[in-house]
Each structure stands twice: as structure tokens, then as C-alpha cells.
Image (spheres, rainbow, N blue to C red):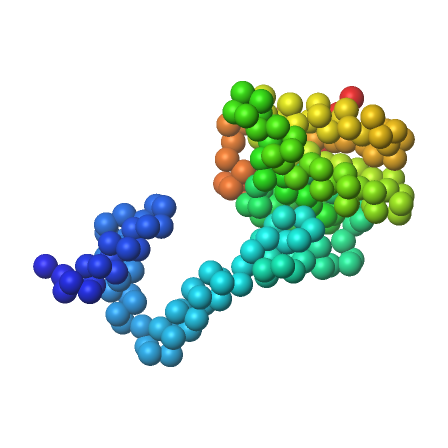
Length: 207
Ligand SMILES: [Zn+2]
């Protein structure tokens, strides 16, 4: 029914998760109705995002390729706090609290021996070698854990605790985790500001 080019575009828009037949057809129609200027801007934005976005060389969050992210480049954030998260998108969830002003470190994976994921498959090594050494020189540091509930989060917490002990850093680094009360299988992507702020304010020391 639709011209072939439009049907093709509509089919390809379905590459995006959550875009079904109806919305992909609507988007295809919207693309056709864009002014030439807007169309060029859209294509340029696609290509910029695709070619220039990578991961922060320090924390692992999204950044311009091979550069520091906006958060790591911000000197005015609190250098005594570093929040550990599993995925770059978890940083976005934590930022929703609007009260956290520290830095981040993305681990890319949580330790889960049953899935063959060990410490060396995460960015824990980089945390200790490159980040904590520098931060602890400035003073005492709080490492805040923001992991989903479950075995992998527990295993990762235990490993980090052990490493801090082994390196004689227990005096300099305290570990806390976001308050219990987050649902067992919550989706960090959908947490709202109030929930995040409360979970952060009520965080507890990991004993
Ligand atoms: Zn960064």
C-alpha cells in the first residue's frame, strides 16, 4: 500500500526497541514531511551520535570518543564520593536524584561466577589502579554502590570490600549502598527523582 521507499524506512525504524508497526509508519511519514533543513539536521545528528559518541576514558559513562564525559570534566563535583554502577545508563538513573554531586565509575559488568563473569571482566581493576589511588590522596573517600539486588551485586560488593581490606584502605575508604527498599527487580531506567533521592539519603554503610 505504501510506496516502497516509505515501507523500507518504516521497516528499518523497527530496529529500535519499542517501535512497532504503527509508530514506525507514523515516524516514516513524519520524516517525509520534514523541511529540507530539518531533514539535514536529523541526518547530521544521527551521524554525529553514531561516529563521535563513545565512552569516557575515566569513568566509562557516555562521552565524546576518547574524551572525558561531562561529569568527569566538571571540577566542581564532590571528589570525596564515587558511585559504582553496572551500566552507563545507571549513571542517568542516579543523576535523576538531583542531589548526588560526586563522580562515577561504570563497571560494565557485575561479578557472577555462574555466568563466567569474574573481576577481570569488569572495570574494578581500573577503579583501584587509576581512580581510588588519586582520590584517597585528597582525603577520605566514600564509595557508593548502586547495583541491582541479587547475587551478582552481592558478589561484587564482597569482592570490592575484600580488595579495600587487602590494600589497607579501610581507614580511608568507606563503602555504602543505596537504601534497601528498592524493589528486588527494579529497573534503574524507570526510577523517579523522589525514589532516587530517598534511596541515596537513606544509604547505609556496608559493614
Ligand atoms: Zn567520566
